[in-house]
Length: 438
Image (tube, rainbow, N blue to C red; front, side, top):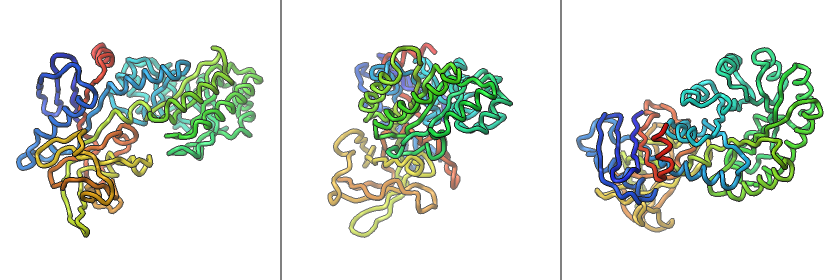
């Protein structure tokens, strides 16, 4: 996968296209905001493509990622949850530049596989900044993390305790408990988490096996919407802490998991902070969390080329783009997302972030359905969206908020690539300085 880094260092921006191994410098206004930087990066890419002469793949889908947004989200986290250390959920978006920035910011990392752990350790991150947050682990992976020095990990069943006792008895264990996650986009407690009726027995077994339980973890579901879910989970975790301490365990860490979204974060964080102050006052317990989409969802914008169009009844069109639900729009299937199409370039003009780019009301303008490139009938991005203008073959659409559970779950179904160029911009000088220093 080719990448490009657009640095926001005045007075020039350097764009390094790894694919072509060329270096281009263009003058920029140092005061540019995030939208301007993203728009410039999008425009330069799509305006440079001649569809009549370009090589196969030159007009492929590509991303623009604003690392400055990730930086601002981190500042927001520290403001609203100063007690809670974030361990970024790598599965959400293992982008190397994002991980590099977060490592420089001092976050921890929530990893669920050998590959994720190797990627983070490859950044020079200390093993104690990693939690192996996978309650059901492959035995050979346990041997790997033992050799790598990654001690923190979760469990939720008796068989897992016997496995850990045999392979990695020195591990620092977190008992993962089930939560009420009915309000989340993706429910996780249907698969992971011990019921409250079983926690005492599991802790007792851990004591019999001579294992080291150091804390409790939970997850209220990915994309949670009910702040009371956090409150109830913290209350339950407090009960388990008391059970563990009664058995002689040094219960010192609470992992409150993920579920945080950018738009609802202040509300969720407020309820979580209140619960922590009520049930875990003072400084004798360390608090950690596993945010993913909170950091990266709005940092990534994807641009897709219109490769075909078909007229349908009532003066509408089916338009086909070069990405779909088997690719970067896998979030529609796996994460219940509803990406909104906007026009990036039409009739030779870039209209990003203008009135001409926005959809209009149903029943007005021209109605479109947006489809992916594969031969499968379920490969549809949007059932209906209306625009004031007529979209043609060769035009471009863009989709915002495409940083979470998109690239990481893309496939190569039907022979379409799942690795696409990423152009990085940085709207925050602080983030740019951190990246330059690492």
